[in-house]
Image 1 (cartoon, helix red, strand yellow):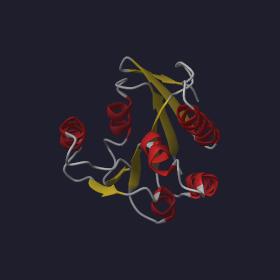
Image 2 (cartoon, rainbow, N blue to C red):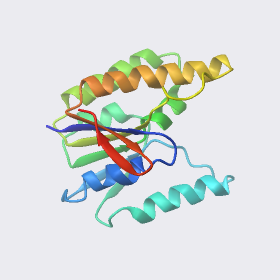
Image 3 (cartoon, rainbow, N blue to C red):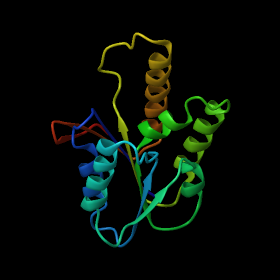
Image 4 (cartoon, rainbow, N blue to C red):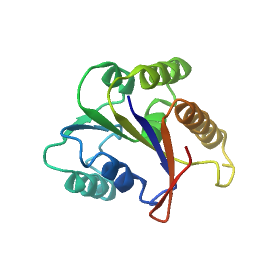
Length: 164
């Protein structure tokens, strides 16, 4: 069983590093948690760049039901990203239950899994209640994922640093 958390700031190279960790896996399910928006050309271009970088044999699954995927048997999983997952589920009334379910599945999975998340603890405290709630929720979830991970890496300026 292998659980790896890759943290980093925006545009730090964390996704490319996470992908490199699974480069030798015979099959990978790329779990994309971001919602697509056909009216946002810049976001569409970012998603296209991520897709183009992946090996052809990798499959892509777009969902926010990360726990269900981790509970299934199967190939290695790359979750990109926990940050976008929190963004997608932040306003759901069962957010705490969803986070607990994700942690339980992360801890119990028999699949090799690499999760990508933004490190939000080094930035400015957001000036809005919603921004602080997002930052606090993601920060706590990152701590829980890290505690149950076999490896944790922090990527800064494209350079991975192993923390655990």
